[in-house]
Amino acid sequence: MQHTILYKNAATLLALVLFTGTAGAQKTTQAVPGNNKSHWVQMNTREQLEYTTTSRGDRIMDFSYAGYEGGGVKLPEVKVAARVYPVAGDNTPNIQKAIDSVAKLPLENGFRGAVVLAAGDFECMQTISIAHSGIVLRGSGIATRIRMTGAPHVAIRLEAPVQTRPMSSKVPVTDVYIPSGTDVMTVADDKEFTAGDLVVITKPVTPEWVQFMGMDRLVRDGKKQTWITGELSLERTVKTVRGNRITIDVPFTDNYDAAFTKPAVTVQKIVKTGGLQHAGVEDLLIDAPEQSVTISQGHHSAIRTRGLTDGWIRNVQIRNTVNSVGIGGRRITVADLDIRHTVPTVGAAKPADLSADGAQLLFNRCAIQGDNVFFLATGAKVSGPIVLLHCTFTGNGWIQPHQRWATGLLVDGCNVPDGGIDFMNRGEMGSGHGWAIGWAVAWNCRAKTYLNQQPPGAYNWVIGCVGLPQQRAMPFDKEPLLPEGIYDAHGAAVIPASLYLAQLKSRLGGQATEATGYTGTK
Image (cartoon, rainbow, N blue to C red):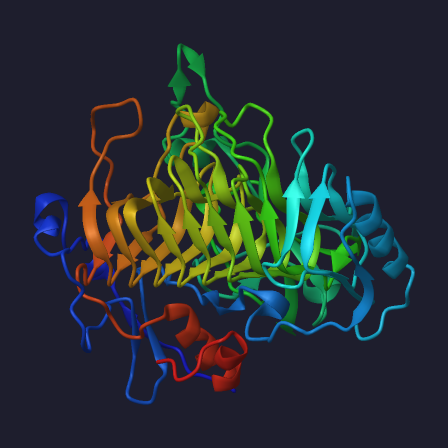
């Protein structure tokens, strides 16, 4: 289903801040229902989305590509290939033996089969590992409990090494400026590329850009801190090639300004082998003993993925793990995850219950209950889209992109009643985390507080949200207060109710939102 995107110039909105400080507090007690509209994304009478652009053409990106198979695809029901029943003592060897046995089966439509754990307690002293494609570890609902014992470890890993091989030379991008949220670039030589190619787009981290971002002056305890070095890269698939103009399958999460990218941004065709595809964990409970520890002490964690493409975690309950779920890879859905803590971690450094270290990640209807945590944090140089959709996080914690320039985050319809949503410059914290996020959006959320700061040359938006805006200097400083990002329609929910679902429906049709678990969305 094709859709039309209509643009309106918004040069006058560059300095728009509708509510700040105490003025914002007067408008944040109750979201006002009705037909309130955002200045930046609107739905017209034909249910087409209209996007306002900045003077340089940047816009809020289409986040609907986040999730399994690139969004809008129902998570599959995989046939049973093996069953495991609990035994006395350490159950890890029995479970691993079943997984390794299924790994020898042939792939059928991308899957080998599900290893199903029966109801009961499975004491596990070691990590359960899924390292081959097409395998799902499934419990029998919360009656299946993986009870973590023994030395601190990760309960379940879905990991396999990935090898990347270049298939062309690095071709320079010739655009003077590529706006964030667009999907087209111009290259010096189009002969290297055809539709369907996997490419890596690489942006050098130059001293000029680091200085422009104000990140060349980070000093802590008399020692210079390094924000980022090297390169920023993202992988995309070539959609079309017309002359020297290349269209990619997923929009850019960042802008590309030739004034700060010498040598030039480049595009290179690559081939990736290894990793694992179409794998998941579902329908079980992971239970760790209470851990009142600092994050530098040994602790039990729940799930890690790395090298995973088109995978999922769904209907998993997690108790008392620390740094609970870390997601690396591409096109992954985490749905109906429930994490709860009966004791908080200790110390100033906080663990991240959800760690987003990949691209096209969807966290859908997740719940967390706990104190002294980051509900979600992002890793260094992460390029989204990453979406938190209709999540509820209670306790003293924060949704806080965490370090070294992640881009392309949407927090959509989330509720953080006791904590905050922070799009911020973390400065010297964590040995120079600095600007943690650019091109992030909070849409129709409710939180106790917001810290929405605007990086040089980029934007962060808080739209249709309820909660108290704050304004602060960089950590460890008292002044100057950092510029605020955009607050749009603050204290009044806007339409569409969900930006992600509206974008998904606009791109793929109503069946895509239904496949994601929603009907009748607008």
